[in-house]
Image 1 (tube, rainbow, N blue to C red):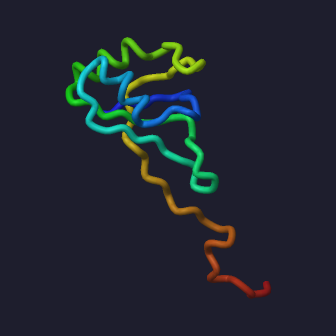
Image 2: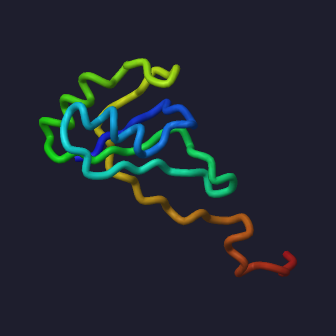
Amino acid sequence: MTIYVGNLSYQATEADIKEIFSEYGTVKQVQLPADRTTGRMRGFGFVEMQTETEEAAAIENLDGAEWMERTLKVNKARPREERKPSSGGWGDRSNFGRRY
C-alpha cells in the first residue's frame, strides 16, 4: 500500500510528509529519493500507509491540494519496472580496438 507523491517542495522533509499523511491514518514509511550527484531531493516521494482505506483517504484528500506553495500530485504508486541493460556505447567492449 504505497502512495506516489509528486510536485513536492525541495524543502519538504520526511517528517513534514509524515505529518500531513498522518491525518488520514498510520504512516508506516516515507521515502524521499535524492539525486545521486547533488544529494538534493528530486521533488517526489513515496508514502506507505497501514491500510488501503487510509491510502484511499489520503489520495482523495491530498491529490491536487496546495502545500508549501505547490499543487501536490498524489496517487497509487505503480510497481517499479525492471530496466534492461543498455546496449552498445562504451558498455560493450567486445569489439574494442578492432578495425573493419
